[in-house]
Image 1 (cartoon, rainbow, N blue to C red):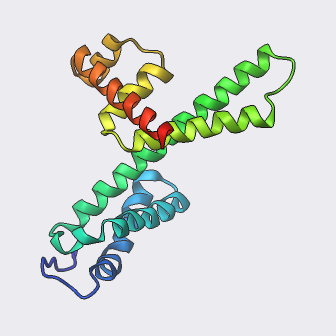
Image 2: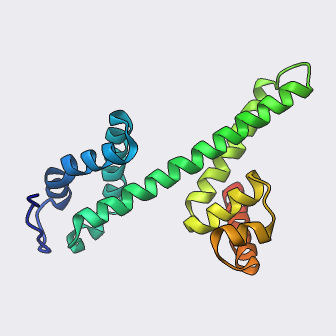
Length: 175
């Protein structure tokens, strides 16, 4: 397979060069990985938007495909986190609806959605492993020892991860 020439030299518009040289490849890679052309197209665009935010780092990229796949994989993880939060919220709504004779008011729903958005934003600011520990402990109800076993870390590290997440959530609510 022919690869575009890799250059570590500065270009007048390195984002344009990166996009022109690798967008098609990234879209194809994401289609194969996700099995859905629409999601692949969305994620390819999101990947370049994320890179646009880090535009200062572009001239230093010598392995653009590795950089693109790493960025895209992180976005896939972010989407999975958000989806897990949404599913947990819907499951909680369903459980509450089963025990109540009425549904939550629009205000209660808005408060819950805002809280979940704050948690999702906070989890975006912590390392991936810390976010995984948080979701496993608080959403899946795993103990610290079970999370430690799942992530192949010590229970003490799990506690550190959870503290990181809780601090990020606290900072998010203060903002």
